[in-house]
Structure formats: C-alpha cells, structure tokens
Image (cartoon, rainbow, N blue to C red; front, side):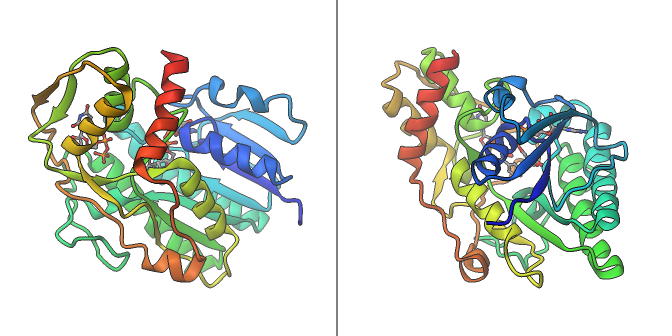
Length: 312
Ligand code: NAD
Ligand code: UDP
C-alpha cells in the first residue's frame, strides 16, 4: 500500500468521521478540517490520539494551504434544518468551499473528490435517477441554497478539470444513515429512531407516501474510496446509494417494530419542495467501480438504533 496524505473537509461530521476512521485504518495520514457548524468533536474524539490524525479548525469559505495527495470535500451542512438555517452561508460553503479546495488541488496537484448529492435531481421526473438526468430543481425555493450550491460545485469541479486538468471525482450521495448522525438534525432516520426510543409520536410529513432509498454509512465510505482510487478518466458524477426504496410510512413502521416502541404515528405538513420519490440508478457505480451496497435496511437500522441508545 502507498501511504498518502489525505485532507477531509467536513471530517468531524457524520460521514466525514467514518471516512477519516477508515482512511486511518488503511494506514494513511489524515487531516480533518472542520468549522464545527454541524460536526462534533465527539465524532472524532477516538481518533485524536492517533499520530496519523490531525484536526484543523477552519472554514472552507476561506483559502487553505496544505501539501496533500488527495482531498475529500465534504464540508457543507447536509440536513434540511441545518442548511436552511443560514441559506447564504450554505451556498457560500458549497461554492467558495469548492473554489478554495479546487484551487488547492490545482496548486499541490492533488486528486479531489466532491461529495455531491441526489438533491441535484430535485423533485425528479425520471425514476430511478441515472446520472444523465439533469434534474428538476427550484432555483428560488427553500432547498435551493443546498441544491443549487451543490450543482454549482459540480460545474466548478468539471471546469477545473477541463481548464486546468485537475484530477476530479464527483459522487452523488443518496440518503445515508448510521451511527453518529446528529440526533437533532431533523433527518428522517434520526428523528424516527429518537422519537421511538423516547416513546414519543413519530412525525410523518405529508401522507408518508414519498419515497427514499437509504444507504448505510459504511457502504457509502466504501463507494467514495473506490471512486477516489478509480482510474483518472472516471471523473463522475457517479451515484452512490442503495436502490432499495421505501415509503416514509414504511420506514416509520420498521423503526417502531425494531425498537419495540409504544410510539404512535402522527402526520405533519409536508415541507415545500420535498421530493416525492428518490432512488438511485447505480449502473455506473457497478460497472466503473465494481461497487454495490451490502447493508439491508433492517440490519443497518438495528446498528443505528444501538448507537442512539448509547447517546440518549
Ligand atoms: P454533517 O453535517 O454531519 O457533516 C458536514 C460537516 O461539514 C460538519 O462536520 C460541519 O461542521 C462541516 N462544515 C459545514 N460547513 C463548513 C464550512 N464552511 N467549513 C468547514 N466545515 C464545514 O453532514 P454529513 O451527512 O456527514 O454530510 C457530509 C457531506 O455529504 C456533505 O457535503 C453532504 O452534502 C453530503 N451528503 C450527505 C448525505 C447524507 O445523507 N448524509 C446525502 C447527500 C450528500
Ligand atoms: N420526514 C418525515 N418526518 C421527519 C423528518 C423527515 O416524514 O421527522 C420526511 C421528509 O419530509 C422527507 C423524508 O422524510 O420526505 C426524508 O427527509 P430527510 O430530511 O431525512 O432527507 P431529504 O428530504 O433531504 O431526503
């Protein structure tokens, strides 16, 4: 194995902390950069004594210089509650963060991977979503700061590749869950598990007939690393997600059953621009990366429930 110096922005977040851990386990030197907006020290506290791990408090909207071989660019609030909280900061993080990290990659000749999102497809009119679908995104809605920020970041990645030959990789991540999700970030899996463990009402938005396809965080990390290690000609975007699709109501029932909770399901208004369906077409990931998710939803939920039991 070649030992690499790797920068992970957003490394103290949910996905970033799993990525840092995995890269350290593979013997790399990991620089975890985070401004701790939604990330938590608790997520990476077990890594702090590792001599190959360094934590850097920094905001990606400001330039940053470091000699590294690879950059994983994850810095961005990811849950609707957090990205809507300060929408201007959200789009600045995506766009200026991408410019700063791409500038760094160009200068030090690092390979750079962008954590893009299934939100680039908006409320999709094509189902399941292949990478060739351009999406159906409202440019001035509640989710636009996130969706359009991530879309602009993809454009920047692509243009730095074409204009400056930067080695880029774009993955479009679909709904991911697992241990270290923030208990208060309002995402559906964490909300339902926390509500179920506290025997509180389970809040289903709308009629619960909207669908999502949930992937376990270890599958995502495996896909991101395979993408980073793929041949240079594979720049993406490549969907990374689990195609097993469930309605939100089905998820609520699963969580109630798996926790043995006394919670009741209640219905609340559907937030605006909430996509009605989402499921990845993962043909490209299978053929180019030899990647497919392994974790079944029930199995992954059990692991996640165990984690939430320890923090509640
Ligand atoms: P998260 O909120 O747990 O992690 C994001 C991290 O970025 C946090 O540690 C946060 O403090 C940090 N951050 C935010 N703004 C920053 C800034 N300006 N400068 C430096 N650090 C900053 O979210 P996550 O679920 O781990 O998501 C990680 C990445 O994956 C995000 O880019 C997100 O858009 C993408 N993604 C996640 C999902 C998912 O389901 N979890 C789905 C699609 C895409
Ligand atoms: N959702 C819900 N109850 C909750 C939180 C979310 O019914 O307590 C719904 C939400 O409206 C959406 C889906 O679950 O349709 C997934 O929401 P999440 O915020 O996890 O992710 P995203 O909408 O970005 O896919």
